[in-house]
Image (cartoon, rainbow, N blue to C red):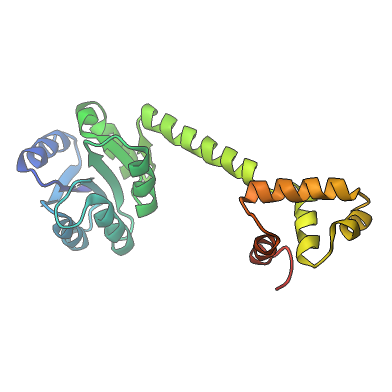
Length: 211
């Protein structure tokens, strides 16, 4: 038996969800809540397998309710149910421990599949949301790649932090002082730093040198 909690401020929404869910064999709605605090309390009390939580709950919103439920109820799978279509919201719900996101406009089409997937302890996202997640991941990866120092730039930053000048670094790395200056400038541009002191602090903070 899959035990389900529904948290939504509107009784008509809760009733509609219950009607859809209880048509499914071996599913039972064991608790309902109309605000975030009640959702957390009902989850602790009823220990559902799946919690369907509206983002726009009163008192505490669905993300904070999800965070508290995830921290206090073992093995619960959380679906954030919302009218809002937002990349930022997707990131927030993942950080809060939810593993599914469903627009209310998509409920008739995807609600049963979402609950089935969560009941098997697998995340659920529609293809559109999956595409958004992939694009966000690739953008973050590209940004990280662009900001990362090359091995040569990291060596130059380390030697600068150790107190060496361009000529000394050039001798150590068998490069011209002009090339060393180019690597220094590239590193500072990538790291968005404007002074040698900031470059030294970066090297210490990132363990390129010992403080």
